[in-house]
Length: 203
Image (cartoon, rainbow, N blue to C red; front, top):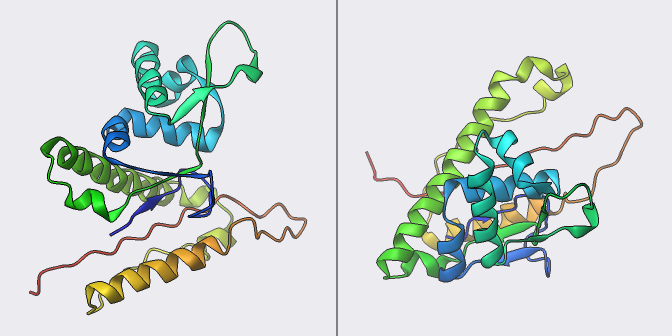
């Protein structure tokens, strides 16, 4: 299993754009607020601790502390070119994060705990995004309502077939990176695509 969470639009495998997580980096990232903050920086660009606090409903003391922790693990860095006021600006170092299957087999209890936090936060984030999309569906043009998808499938596959399916779907999704053909109407928007593949016990 190799979930990729491109928090934002990097093509998987693009050199320098995707952060490959090891056990140490995972332990540094596996915190709900840190993951939310990193997502906000990747999607929205550089920000200060105060701006992130206002956006996420947290105190600036909390966001400042967790930004320093993210920096210590190499996920964020100073953005001095912003140069607006005396507050410290931060930016994401990478465009996405890749979680290798080796971490799933790590026997260290602390790493296992971090894996659980990381994966559950991704699942919660996906659920929040879908719920928001449903709640705001009437704010979009009809063509968007007709273009969205909320599907699920049940297949009978081997582990190897499941890996192959995920790999091919990743390749297909990434083939659309930077491929927008503007038609002059300004119709393009950021589209989130989720992929979940997991085994279930037979009923």
